[in-house]
Length: 398
Image 1 (cartoon, rainbow, N blue to C red):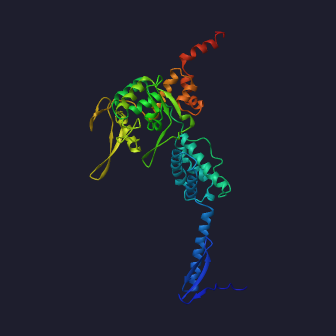
Image 2: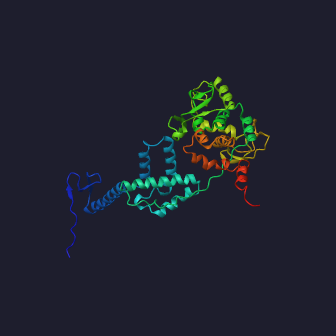
Image 3: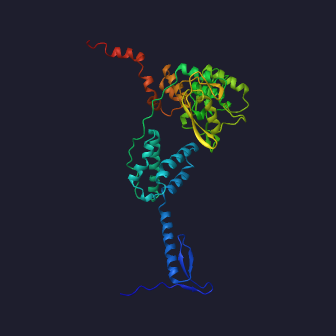
């Protein structure tokens, strides 16, 4: 059996070293040098392994690399707010558990384990994450990065069922408004309670869309607010086509907006001191005027001599805050911005407004959305059904 020949390398007199040229992953040749053939052989082996790994990475990216590339490709086709939502979900539920794996190495079991984190959250979050998994890996199949989509058999059901939404009672609405009357969040709360605006619609509302002197006062919803790196961004690109709508407003809201407009020096109904739309931090500060007046227990973190100490406050109804006597704990209930909108829609339905009209006024894309959420209000009121039930069984035997 013939012995393998030892590799022969070019001797470079000027360097007093051996040299070997090898082709890199970009097709260009690179020169390697060493003082002995043995040393050069080892160096060549190391570089060739690096080249092979580089070629493999290019042909088969990691989940992190491909997911980030996919997000970049979507940027030109989706709303900024949607992109922000996608980016957040991809980072937490896809890159965090699978980011270092190569796309071709991801198995269906890997995906099921990774998506378990989303399954522990709400059903809507789970559906959104599942959709992203399928779109990202489906795109990789189309681009021939991988041969098969490991997400195709994911269970469509998952996540916790949402808590049933509850509207504020008349007494709670009265208590809330009395607690914040004359304070910065008052106009925002009124817009949500009496026009059903979403948070992003209320914070983007400008006076050119508010018509208070008409025979039928109304608001035109045509802008949406969101933040990018805490800075406010107001766009005319709304959540859906149905979100662009005209809403007639009742006297309570008309009076409130007239009073706000008299002292306003801004194009925005809700603005900061400079007349600009609120930043993310300013919005959080605005809503805190509401939360600090409730009796909900809360925990603060304070630093005492450089040490981080948690401090829990259990407010007592009717008492003033120890740190600020102007703050009185007057609300024995918790309230969220979306709950204000929910209260508006609930009141319309209980007043007998038909579902199709409520759908339009609420800016729901389909009446089915309104029905799915509020059917129990429309079709499950005994006082409204008793006459129909009695008539249905009028001729049946006793």
